[in-house]
Image 1 (cartoon, rainbow, N blue to C red):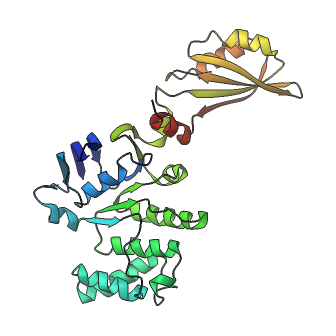
Image 2 (image 1 turned 180 degrees about the vertical axis):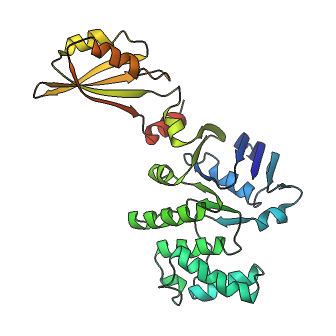
Image 3 (image 1 turned 180 degrees about the horizontal axis):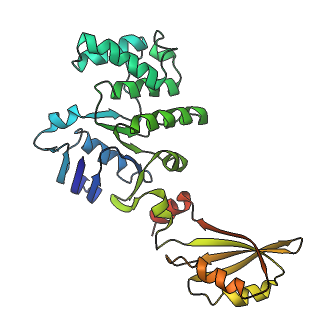
Length: 311
């Protein structure tokens, strides 16, 4: 669907993108994460044909962005962080205008506006002026604009920026519906949004890709710690530490406290290997009752901080 190869972009002496290579599959919802200035918006603007790369190649739907930019744009819908709306127009008039600009036939136009009204939840505001709308509704109108030509690829730059929690959930649900049929690329700072919405996460820092995978894959990365939480009955704290500390892959055995004769521990692990079998085997050797045994990976927020913090 989209192939990005060795993509670099300079603004004067500033290197915004540093030899990025990435493949995006059809029907994928990809979340683009990174701190301010990481290069997210620059990448999205290159994908939409708004900016030219300094070097590297981008192809979408089999077309090169250098050789066939207009062909690529036919397949792309783009919503920038601030939806570019004509605020003195009624919502219906605006969507009607967008359809005309896109060259949609009169017969198809009425049906398409009705479809987008249902998808984006605009039925109650179709005859209201855009300047009267809340930011959440303006974002919905912007989404309808971006989807008017039924694009194969939908690119969203911070689609929930500035929205309240209820509006964020509403926009997230719309994106999930869209993602069942389209390839969606969205940039965001809201990590919970990525976990709830995206099939895949790409983290960019200082113009480079520092992580790429599903949230589950990132949390299981060999460079990142995970923890095993256990609760035992009939055990002494020091005995547990003596027994489990030598297990390869356990960095630390932390005693969390006791309640009604039950002792809770967190085993901090620094290995990609699953050591649950070995830990359970050790516990089984003793006359202890195992009440809890769970595996806990780092949160996406902590992973993000570790990958993007200053060195």
